Amino acid sequence: MTPLRRVAGRTVTTIEGLTEEERERWAAAFLAHGASQCGFCTPGIVCRLVGHERKGADLQDRETVDRLLSAHLCRCTGWQTIREAAAEVSVDYPYRDLGQASRQASLEAGTQQIVGPEVVLGEISFADDQPPHNALVAIRNDADWAVGETLHAARESIGKVQGRRTSMESRPPLDLPPGDWSVTLRTGWVEPAYLETDASWCEPSGESSNPIANGGAFGGKTDSDVSGQAESIAAENGVGVRVLWSREDVVRYGSKRPPLSAGLNADGSGVIRVAKTPGVEEIIQSVLPRCEIEQIEVAGPPTSVALRAAGWAEAEMLKTGLRGYSDWVEAPSGARARAEVDAEIIRVEVESGTPLDLVMHRSYCIGAAHMAYSWVTSESLSVDDSGEVHDLTVRSFGVLRSSDCPHIEIVSVGEGEALAAGDAVFAAVAAATWLNRGCPSDLPTG
Image (tube, rainbow, N blue to C red):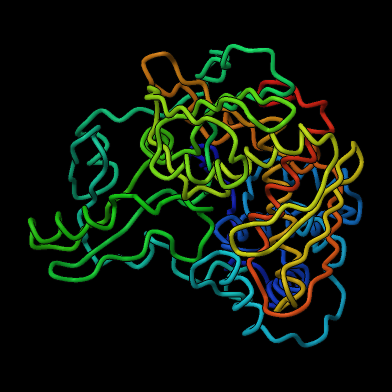
């Protein structure tokens, strides 16, 4: 992210350059608070906090930590657990079964995840890590692929330019159905905003690396073509190859939750127009069975119901808007959640069995609550009438910063078999946030 010319003549310290005492202390604090999930962003955040700790910064002061975190983006944790870890970095934490913590994280992520100091300190492998020596690099060139000996050479061959943030205003792509409705809702294009872009590598006749790695894709990457392309290009060239999507590729070609527009009567009947997406009609009607669903071809990025609670959360929002108060929502996993939102606090009750590890359970619930609150209030992508996306940088997605987030309180009330709680929390907080904002027709609410 930082051009080399900006650090010319300076000393650069990465996570490996911290003292052993700093590494151990910060890893312990992050683990104790669930302040790292996929771990992709964590080493940079730790370095930032350590650098200012060395300068004597008061890391128990939220305003100070919020300012330091403004240079980062952590999509998983919702910031709060990071602030908590920074405030208690010198505490002597008791032993905890990290095997159980890993199982809790894997349950929530829907894929194998690791919880341990190696995640906090950047010592696990992500999709683009440990490729074969001298591997070629393949990058997208619209529907084709450009191959070079280095990433720079591949980009140079197609004149790849840096992405941008547009001044074009975002707006929902579907008009409201005509009618005198009790409640209406229009959602627009939003970016899942996972931090590690789609990537894979493969040896000839080998198996490609997993693009999801340690999780953190929130249902994204499930239909990414990078693994298949890595195997195909490696076999074609007879050498190892890395296949990489840029951030712009993720925004243009990665799946999004389908935008919709809805008008509902007081009895729950109505019309919902939604971007044509396999499976979306069944998902919406599982919550709103009396609604007529119109699937419409919409120019723009591909859509998928694999994204976190896609279609289902929107239906729960509409149901809550009709009801006029927050109630329990139940996810397909069987987990339930109920949320209350105001300017100071997001309070969430969660009924998802007995957690395997309370710390990671709480961390994932806080992350889901932040994602829902951010989605409803501030996230959007500008997409023109031809379907071209104009917001192509991480900073243009509208993900809420640490300083903009209310405190999130999680109360776990369940017993029995542990269930994945994230989608239930996401839908409950989205519905409660929209209700708190007065159920305006268009997202984001501001």
